[in-house]
Length: 412
Image 1 (cartoon, one colour):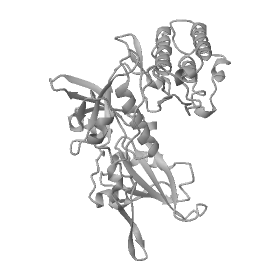
Image 2 (cartoon, one colour; image 1 turned 135 degrees about the vertical axis):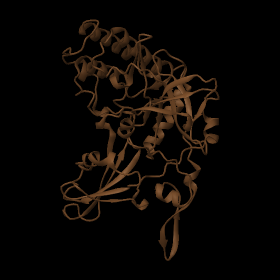
Image 3 (cartoon, one colour; image 1 turned 90 degrees about the vertical axis):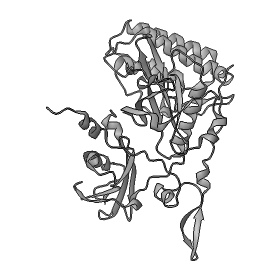
Image 4 (spheres, helix red, strand yellow; image 1 turned 90 degrees about the horizontal axis):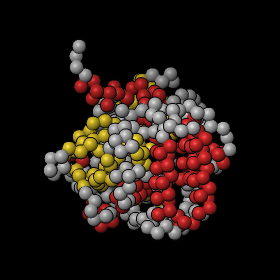
């Protein structure tokens, strides 16, 4: 189930007048990762102060009880519900034009397998944009996989999703990387919705009950060297939450490559996201349970922040803290002596093509009138506008997981 603290995010406050006037009408669009939809929360500037995001806890109390048709709610200055709206015009969700597979197919490895979205059976919601699902292959064999998808149209997220799909589908098999599985297509127009990877049920190293083994840390440094120095890939988000445990094979598996970049013979713009710093910060958090370093914005990070402080041990380890730190220091020194130019000239560099523009965005939409004549433009548009103009819109919306769980509970 999605962690409640990760379920909602607000796109900020929109003021229809002076924000310092407490009577100014204010709208806040809040995204729900559980139901995969936006709800507009309306009230006044007295309640919705800039950057305080009080709309999130307000919606969190109500979201599971709202009808799927509700597009907006209105609350009073105490945050109490006063009205709901099912008017589709209240829906400010941006239209996401998923790429047709006929465009993507020549750009991905030819051996990439596909599966239709309707063939996936939801088993759990692991996190924002990640579901646990199962499907049967052509031989009737049941597979349990993680399905990663992006239902939100934002340029950065769009680019990250494209990069991750292309990188994972091209990565050579490695015992410490979660393997790519299939590209997921919608059932009507065969558009690319996301992809699946193999599922490992033992959780991540973020689980503080799991003892930390030196062998697993050694594996992490090896896979980072493989990515950086052999393939010219920077993962960019080394963290305990991205290190899966495979107890059967006694290994850790790196996943979540949405921040990954290829150096491709040029300097990378990933200051603070270099994987050597990421490994040092991750090990500090794993041993100490102190998240103050990993909470530092990546652009302000420096590896010395981790190496020059005490590491109180708050986790069960199979070796002394000093052994872990000595291994880390030796590895960091070796990487520094090798020089990061090695990654810029990696012998087996992986590259992929730029993301195409979905043809849907070349369809003109009317944005008003100019001198009494309709004014048109192309590019991004709201989901409401796309639907009104007859464009195909994939519908992600689903019931809250709490309702699904309630249906499966047996009566006493």
